[in-house]
Image (cartoon, rainbow, N blue to C red):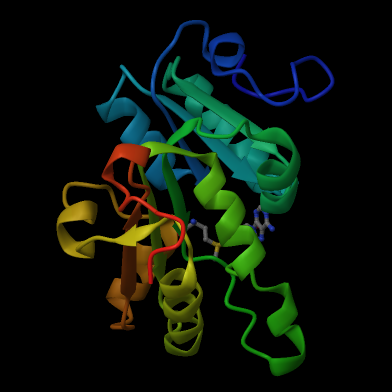
Length: 206
Ligand SMILES: C[S@@+](CC[C@H](N)C(=O)[O-])C[C@H]1O[C@@H](n2cnc3c(N)ncnc32)[C@H](O)[C@@H]1O
């Protein structure tokens, strides 16, 4: 079943229950019409892909397209990013988290609706497996500055070079349009180091 029915599955989500066998799982928040998610899923049948989308129309579209293409490794969930991050995801469970072209909410009075906030990024960090990645793109220069600041302050996530991190990944639906329109695109890549990689914190040392 491609569509995840939250009334019929364990919460927090259990990948083995959802995908039928253990496999690394990548999550796309705001999957839109699914161009990115479905292409990636076709290229990596050994991984699970969960798309999360709050708009019913796009959610249905992804479910239908995944079914039509026979993609057994795709699951689609209709909910908000916040519900996913603060209620549904088990800690240390996601291999790669994609947030591609989140709504920029350009008007100042709407800035509070933006997804990339400190508490949300903290929850994204919790959801990643050690060694897992958070990959983000935006076409909006002002939002890019805000994202850079929030990600720069994120504890437990380290910045890695974005270009190689995105290499070989499909374009999203919005991205193809933005490239055509010549809009600037800013990409961010972060990695969650494993506990062994983190510098030891020793009490009492200056
Ligand atoms: C600008 S579109 C980008 C879609 C796709 N990632 C792309 O690049 O083509 C943003 C998408 O995120 C969804 N969205 C916005 N806020 C969301 C939220 N809080 N939770 C889940 N989806 C959200 C919207 O419905 C929309 O489909």
